[in-house]
Length: 263
Image 1: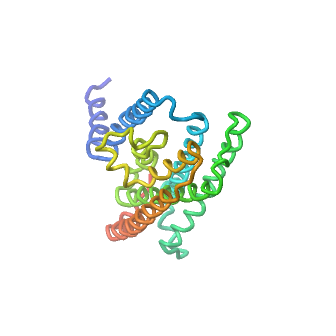
Image 2: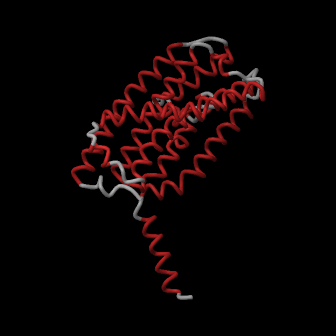
């Protein structure tokens, strides 16, 4: 065994990590986010164990809504990544296709992928746990719609990063939502967060969506102001996401890096 060859291969991977900020972030945030998220959940239940009169129903419903958001974003990212992995992204423009047409097609295809994965999970919650997400009533449609818009927005942000940084940004596609989960207040109210984090959480539509969900299930009341705020924030972030996608595409085209995107 040659020490020089071993050391050379070590340096190869070391400099690969050192020269890639997305790879460094990938190594750091997984354990950090898991500890923070479940730390806040544990703090909430230890301090307010009697907060929910139907703990399983509230937690499971929020879990289903969060999974819908997760699948929406991941489905959009996967469709875009498949074009990159197959080195087919530039071939799409032979049709020719516009950027707007690509985005729209990904939005609707991602919805189909999301529903295929989520509908069976929803159907088994009633016989297994006696919980039905349909108890949310008409607001359920608006909750799903708001979550889907935010999921697509995250997909646009990640896809823009892929155009800008290439495959090195791929890990962010799998973990962008986990990064926001502690601030999204999925399983606990915003009051559990430290004041510093609350200021950041309030600019996320997730806080208002899941606060409304808990309000309906716990208090049996609907506060449409939360939904209005969530849709307003979604419209703002979606606009930024679309503009960022166009900008990243334009920069990649000028640099000639579109052809080199792929494995």
